[in-house]
Structure formats: C-alpha cells, structure tokens
Image 1 (tube, rainbow, N blue to C red):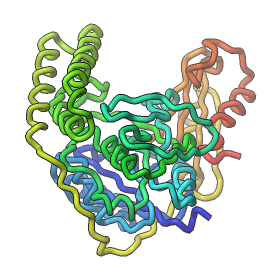
Image 2 (image 1 turned 180 degrees about the vertical axis):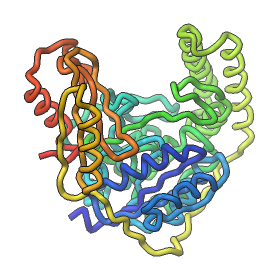
Image 3 (image 1 turned 120 degrees about the horizontal axis):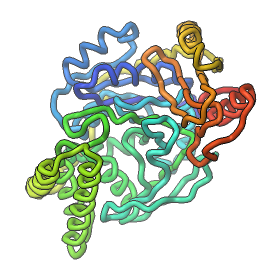
Image 4 (image 1 turned 60 degrees about the vertical axis):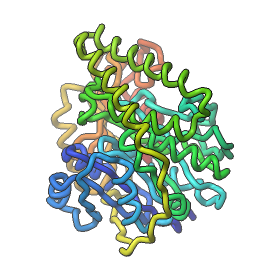
Length: 411
C-alpha cells in the first residue's frame, strides 16, 4: 500500500502570508496519510502561520533570504518522510494530490515524480508532461492522462518536473546534495532533473496529481505575471548553461533566451502592461544577472544531513466524503454559506454556480476551503470544448462532477 510511505510536504514562502494560509487550507484537505508539513518562510509569515488554529501540526522553519534552493534544502533537513513533496505557497493541491503523486514510488526504481499544473483560471493547463534538454529547452511528451508513466532518462535529456508539483525520494535527494543553491530563483528543479538523469534515475509523470498555481505577486513579477526584474533569471541561466550546456552551444542558446525575453516584454508593452522604458530596464537586468551568474563558480554540493527531528503527522481535516453543491448564480450567497458549513463539518466541498450564459468557467479554491466553479451553463469549462452547447442544469452538474471526480474524490 502507498500509505506505508511517509511523506513530508515542504512549502517555501516569502512575504505572501495570505497565499500561504490558503495553501495550508488546501493541504489540510489532502486525503493521503501519513504526511507531515514543513513550512520554510520569512519571520513575518512564520508568525502568521503560528496564528493558524492548526499551527501545532506544522513544522515552521524561519528563513529570511531570497534563495528558494537554500530554503528548500533547509526544509529537506527538517523533513523526515520517505518521500519529500514540494508545492509553492501560491498554489493549492487537489485533495487526492499525494495519493496519485506518491503511488509510483512503490516501484523502487522511481526516484522522482511530477504532476500536472492548472493555471490561474483553474481549468487551463499551465504545465503538463515534458522532457528537458541540456540547453534548458523543453519538448512535450505524449502520455496517458489517466495513469502514471515511468521514464528512464538519459544524460543530457531529463524528465521535467515542476517545483510546485513534484516529489523526490528523500534518500536520493539528500545523497546528491538537494538543490543547487546557486539557483536562487528559477531553473532550480530543472537542474535537479538533469542531475537525476545523469544518474540514470527513473522519474514518473502523474497527470492526475493536480495542483492549481495562481502566480501571486512577488519581488520579481506582478500578480498579472508581468515581470518587474529579470536579474535572477539571467543569473540562473548563466549557472545552468555553464553547468549543463556544451560550450559550443552556449553563445547561441543565450542569444535565443535574450530574444525570447525581449519578445515577452514587448508583448506586455503592446498590451499596455509595460512602458517602453521598462523593456530596456528588464533587458539590462537580464544581462547584468547573467554576468553575475558567471561569477558564482562551480557547484558545491554535499550530502544533506539526516533530520534531528521526528515525524510529525498532520491530521487531515477532510473526511471520506467529497460532496457537490450546485445552484444558479442568483443563489450564490446562500450556496456559499452552505458550502462553508460543509467544509467546517469535514467534507471536501465543490460548489457549482452557473449563470444562464456562455461565459467561460473558472475554478477557485477560496480561503474558507471551498472549491468553487463559476461560469455559464452553456459555456466552456475545458477550453477545448465548443464555445456554446445547450445543457440541462442537472446534466451540466453531472458532467462537471465527472470531469473533476477522479482528482476531487467525487464518486
């Protein structure tokens, strides 16, 4: 049984206490057991977590530097599970996330696993299955969306996992030194993927292990994903290319990266999100970061120590039932009140609230722990559907329940 494997969920957070609390609310509905929760955060966010009613079940580790790799390594050093799973503070996992993500580790060959990530609207895919080359370029992989698949990577081409939805066997992760702390932001997990590939380690891709990633504002981007600073992205690219990319290909690859970042900035400028002077500032920051990254030298990785603490099981609030509440948009306030009561009673609660329109659907996990889906009765949920389709209300509710049933635990 997969439940024989203990899991440590590590969450790194910096100056986003509200997002962190929402993430923890979602984690509290995870149906897998046993697992523990380790939060590595700035002191103010740690204080915020300690005010949470269930704070005693969370191992809170203060860390006040802007280095996600170092923060993750600190979390690993305080994690005691057989498997370490990672999720970002601005993301929320589906209740069955760990059940699916940990299942492939029953195969002793599997050292890492990654799931699929939905974007801000809770419907569209932000990332699915990919491999990554020594240049950092990614290539889509065709997989069966209904089951986990195990891949044996090779040196120079790895199976890509996303830092906000991945798990690694602790013994392996500690032995190779965890994350390379030269990557203070960006490409940290990609570097890990390539190091695992160099070992010949097997990685599983698990489509049904779903996380919703919201892209909260940070010191480097706004909440609408518009970048404000590319320095650390440039620095990480320098470290990555010096480490993994053949010397003969680095110059051309860096030119291609700069061109793509410029195109992205220009798209934001055309949309009105950036001014022309902002584009130049971003590109100068990218180049300055690259030059600084070249000075970070070679990797200095050593095995991480065994934890000095004991496993602290987190008791999930969710019971065995996942229920659906549905109604019309004009009953939204009443329906939401009922949904909150059901969450408080220990139910995983999905609220469908439809208007008589063809508006596209959105899914949100709110601060009260309710999974809300809003949109038009005749509109798209999955973006591959027709723009308009006539539905009877009960049939639409049934169809949407079936669409998310496997990951939400709806029977």
